[in-house]
Length: 190
Image: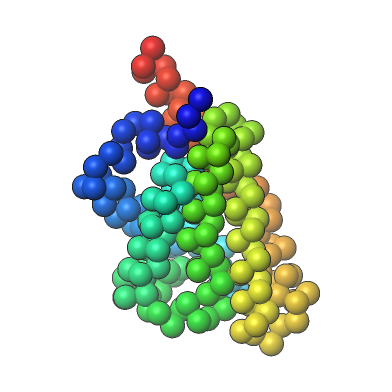
């Protein structure tokens, strides 16, 4: 059985124009989700990881990775797509830089896991969303530790621990949405 992301199942990535539209839509979705933010220092809590999980679960590895690279390019070039409407390449060098760069890897890995068999069922889709979301803390915390006066424990406490419950919830929500969409597609085709 072929393992295909939702958008591939719908035939949405079959032409260059559709791929470009998907990348544009996805990058705007991530930019908009960054504006739903709970101010925390030094890393705010946003809905970006939910949007990234959805993109990875539905687009597949390559298209999801390209979408997040486009998001980073757009925000770095001046579109107000970073948390709180921020923009500019300077944010890639700030305390959240490790997370921002890690977003592209998170999207790619989520899509990769879907393409390798975690493409159907709530539990599998949850794992495909949660594992990359958890691994996002590796570059995020490492960069926070490097760029701030925090020691490793302080960087973990500021950049990882407060986000774990939210990560579980966002991964579950993403898996529920995609599971529901696959069920709706199956029902429609029957």
